[in-house]
Length: 229
Image 1 (cartoon, rainbow, N blue to C red):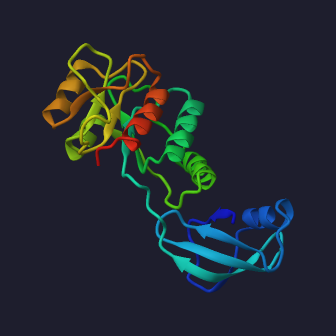
Image 2 (image 1 turned 180 degrees about the vertical axis):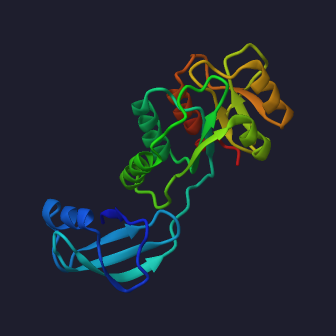
Image 3 (image 1 turned 90 degrees about the horizontal axis):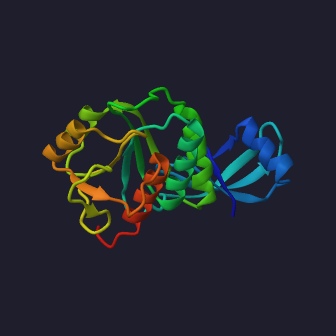
């Protein structure tokens, strides 16, 4: 059964779908009266609905069944400095959603070059990936926040960086907080020291030096597939 997304699902038993979704349902997919689909709000509602009027501008549906969503198997919070190239950010969002990340925060570090992000566009990417992956809870995307403010209020995580030091492999220990990924110029020594003072573990993501967005995806894979809770 196909999945559709509606951020604000009405509290009525029968309601109209938005015009954009109605057009997709009635004209693109050629669904008609009596056909059913799954409708998600990405947070706390999963509905099975039946089409009662297949109109391309106001497709009317009726709720058949409702339940709570199936949560992601693991909670994983990625905190990363945004890249200069927006396409790379969108690619990363798509991939980490498919893999199973649950929260994403963008960091303004000393070397961060982009602080203006189109969060609505990134949410659309996340919604599309959520439906593609047959997931029922939408990735929570937070706006850009000052690095030290974030670390201060989200302690005991892990920080990935390229400077020489003793590092643990991500996925080889119990993670108590988010994973930090730096900008294209990496974290500086002060930022690394500050994270360590707040209980962060220094980590590596393998032998290769990765692009920022690739590091975000790899960190998600390693932690989601970790045997540690």
